[in-house]
Amino acid sequence: MTRCLLREGNLIGFRIFFDDTGTLMSELRRLPQEDVQKVFKDPYDQKMIQTILSKVMENFEDLHDKIEVELDALNHALREQS
Image 1: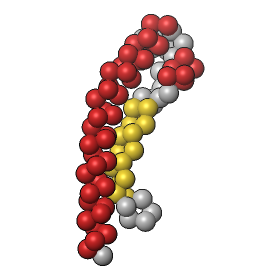
Image 2 (image 1 turned 60 degrees about the horizontal axis):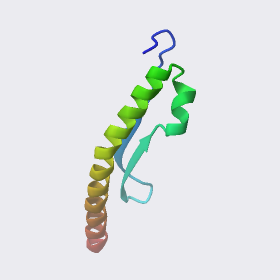
Image 3 (image 1 turned 90 degrees about the vertical axis):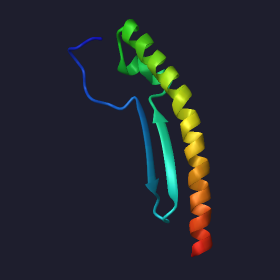
Image 4 (image 1 turned 180 degrees about the vertical axis):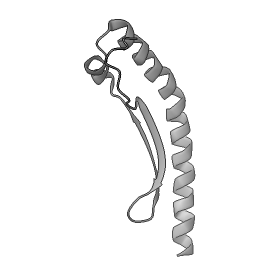
């Protein structure tokens, strides 16, 4: 990976939070595939990052789906108690 212009940035982000209405939410973000070439100029780096994004997202998307189901159930239970 080219070392001269490295800056910190998120390739993939996941968070669980309360929105402004008090609802539990989850968010899964990633660097879009079309932006990989804008951020990484070296073709080897681009391929490596695309592979990382693809492999990690395979697992994170399933995890995110499961967590969303659980959060929906928790939100429903919390609304029932109110």
